[in-house]
Amino acid sequence: MRFYTTYKEKREDTDMEIHWRSETENHMKIHETNGVTYLTFQAFEELPGIVHGFSTRLGGVSRGDCASMNLSFSRGDREEDVRENYRRLAAAVGFSPEQIVCSDQTHTTNVRVVTEADRGKGFAADRDYTDVDGLVTNVPGLVLATFYADCVPLYFVDPGKRVIGLSHSGWKGTVGRIGKVTVETMQREYGCRPEDILAAIGPSICQECYEVSEDVAEQFMSAFPASEHGKILINKGHGKYLLDLWAANALIFAESGILPAHISYPGICTCCNPDFLFSHRASKGKRGNLGAFLG
Image (cartoon, rainbow, N blue to C red; front, side, top):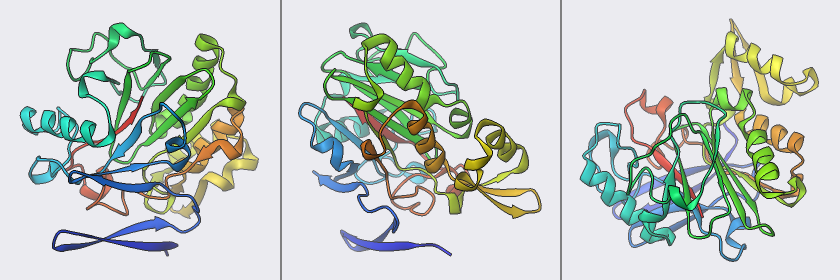
């Protein structure tokens, strides 16, 4: 049984239902600019000098399984279409694609300290790094970018220090606490205090859609105190569990010293909204990639 309020958005000649999690009061906001639809967090919109967004499937030029706002160069899509998608999304959100610095995601907990020398890497220039699932920087004018189709985007902003972070947290990254690694990197490199950091969990798969095997569940049981197991796992029996990556990452944020009042939630599941957001699980792997951007 799903617990949703439903927001119905009419686009062109098609009615599209967006399923929002009813328990999330302040969920992300939908924006449309020049035909490009993207999502933002209200708490981040209120920060001067911060640009951010999360893409949807809508507003690009890609076709087939990647229709239409695919941001991956490795899903069999035409490169010229992917580049046009970046240009359209960047213009809608409010930055230039040449400002982007991209991750190189391999489900690690590696966090790269991004400098001016990294400007454009992954879009306008080749990356000279590998195995990077998190990015942090204090360089004005850079836009960090990470990519998704069910895994969890983690956003971090220290408004006082003008430091930002963006990390990709699938189940492996969550077990490894990449969220905490990102906060610790911001502390070590820039002197950030966790209580000053605003954090957000981006669009990703919800617990009701995310069935995992017993070996995955056991890793979470080992990684989290027994008192927290009921918050992140539901035992379905027969060696199957439902895993809540949102709750797990919220626990990691709290463990890292981020205040509960400073955490924003998406309120939207990729797998429940496969026409609006790419979902690896819903599409059985036939999909493009979404992008998280923070600058």
